[in-house]
Length: 244
Ligand SMILES: [Mg+2]
Image (cartoon, rainbow, N blue to C red; front, side):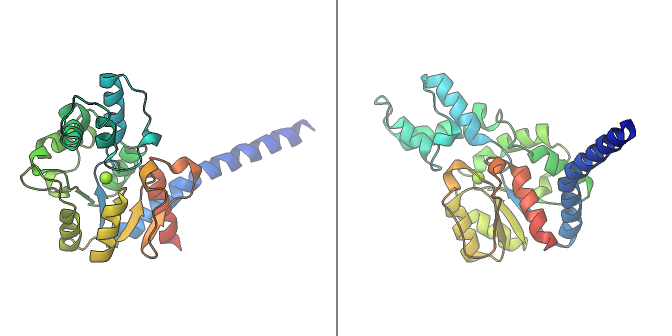
């Protein structure tokens, strides 16, 4: 009887270890499958948890109690600033706030981002990081990545060179110029423009503001309830699709 229980316990332990290893195995195989393909990551809210940090700083600064789940679009901060009658231009205030050092540099990574990116790097894949961020914010971008992922060199970054304008068309130009196959994205509007003007497949990182969005082709998104605000789950979904 004792031997039976020990055997059963060992079986359960082995099984749970095997289950734990499944995502690992899928990711390793996906990385192998990606050797012949090109991958790019949008930066804000795909790799860098910029909006999460913006919400925290906004709450601290203005005494509100918003959550990331309250963010319904990329312009949510501007909507909140409209409630402050002392702010003349809510859109400009939101831009300045979002693009500030305390938000851009001090944001945390999106869940699982560093784990996935370090595996990709160790496997000697060369992903691109691309953003419509204003060119004037390049130093802040390099500061963040220099801290969190110092192993990626500057050739991995496709960023606007100068100016203070956000330019969604820049993502399309970058994806076409590098012949990207898979692009990780969180903004529905940008995903649509990229889908319509490139051959890339969109891998959506689930965020509260993109839950109703879909594309009829070249579109991958996790339906796992734990996948909200997680790059790891988005990557796992791409990995699964590459196995099929
Ligand atoms: Mg983004």
